Length: 199
Image (cartoon, rainbow, N blue to C red; front, side, top):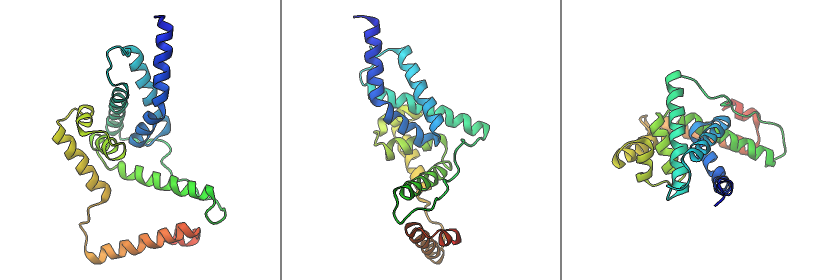
């Protein structure tokens, strides 16, 4: 077989999975440019390794991109840096339910989720994103974070508790929070920027 034909086939198989790899990396890193860097590093590792010894290419790619992201998250934690582009998008004036407003609201929710994910340790974040967002089995998650399967489950469980914000406040305080959230959602859905800013 012509080596160039093999390289082209490997590139084609990688490109079929690029979108998913980018989605995994973006949800872990919170930065489109860092996610693209992680995907590119995954491609380079695939080229160096070759596909001959890889039985499950999608699983291998997910594992490698996750490990690259884990390394980037650990480096970020060590340097105490925030990724560029974490600012919430500005709301533009459009009609009720305009597609651009829906997109802005979706972006805002995504930014809020990334802010919550930033409270997680790198292994917790990787375990949570892989298992809870992309349904990767815990056996594979454990291999990525270099822990036992029960430890990987515990990482994801701890992350879930942090993301959900397990309440440690009084019932009255929870009710006040619920009212604020309802007012926020009503203002956001109604496009009432003044009420949204007040909340």
